[in-house]
Length: 170
Image: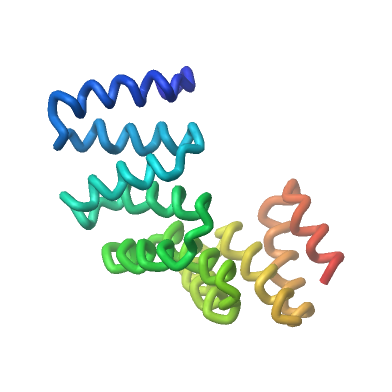
């Protein structure tokens, strides 16, 4: 059903599963994912929270919760989720970048850069970390340094037009 993008059908199917067994984690997880695709972020958040009440370290639910919270603009709560994810795996570049993005949204650019640095240290070609570090540096007025990171992004993937455009604005 996912490949066919029948997200409403997935929600209905999962609802049936959950009526039979409200503890069915697969039904809850699939509901959350389908709600995300349907842009029903509050419902996705509810499903994630139900999973996390039972399994507080479920990384799939935590990451889906981050997606929902991003779309709801609830950046402080994203930070809490990312702290939890990073306590489970401190080298998870997705969580490091998500933490940094949420910090950027909160206007905490210098702190965000430290998380991008960690992601880049683990994965030197991490486009998300490199590009957003460049944007953060530019936002802080460190234009010369930001150009170094825009150049790295362009070298790794020349198709990324945003790097060239942002670089020219720096």
